[in-house]
Image: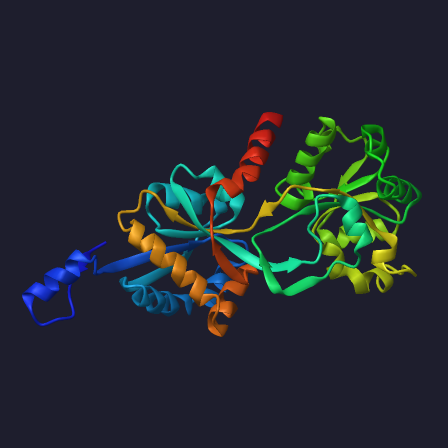
Length: 336
C-alpha cells in the first residue's frame, strides 16, 4: 500500500493543514467475499461495488485509487486473510467472524426484512399466524424454529405447547426429527443449543433424526408425515405455502397444519468485518467504510450488488451481539 498526502489548496500551508486532517489516498483497498455462491457469479455481481465504494469513501474524506475484489477459496481462507492482513475488508458470516475475531473486527451487520413474529415463546408464533415480512422494518438477526407437522405425534406436541405445558425430553425424543447439515446455523447448530438449554441434550442424542437435503426436502417429509418435527429458519414456511397444497398435496394450508414448538436465540446476520492487522486499516477508514456501505445499500445499484448475499442493508455492529455464535462454536467443539 502506498499512502499519498495531499491538499486541495495551492499553498503549502493549506496542504499541510489538509494532511493534519488525515486527508490521504489509499493505493489499493482489498475486499474479500466468501464463496457462498459460484465465485465467477460473485465477481460479476460485485464489479459495480468498486466504483461505488470509491465514490462513497471519497464522500467520507477517504480517497482510494483502486478497490480490488476477490472471492476466497473457502470461508476459512477469507478469515485467515483478514487475520494475516492480506485483505482489508471481508464480507463473512457471523460464524466465520467469531472463529477469526483475534484478527478480524466486525464493523457492520447485514439487515434483512423483519418478520411479524419474533417472540422466544412458540405460542406467540402460533397465535399470530401467518408470519409475514415487514416492509418498513429491518432486522439484524433471525431465529431458528422447531416446527411440528400434521402427523399424530406432531399435533400432540403442538397441542401441549399451545396449552402452555412444558415439553419434556421424552416428548421430543419420541418424535421423528428432520434436521439440516451440521454446518447449518438454524437447521442444526442453534437447535442443538436449544436442546442443550432445555434438556441438557443435543441432536446427536435424539433416537430418531434424519438429515434432509435442503429445506424443500424438509417440508416434503413433514407434509408426507414421514417426520414429526423439522428445524428451519424463521420463517421458512413462508417460502413453502404454495408447495404445501400443491406439490405436497396437503388439503389445509401450511399455517393450519404446522405449529412452532421451540424458538432459538437470535442468530445474527452476516458481517462486514475488517482486518486488525492490515497496514491500510485505521479508525478513520473503519468509520468511512461503515458510512459507505450503509449509504451504498440505500441506492438501487447498491441494493442489486449486495443482493448477491441476500443483504438489504447494514447497521453498525456490536461484537457482543455475536456471543451466541461464540457459545455455539464452543459447544460444538466440546461435542467432538
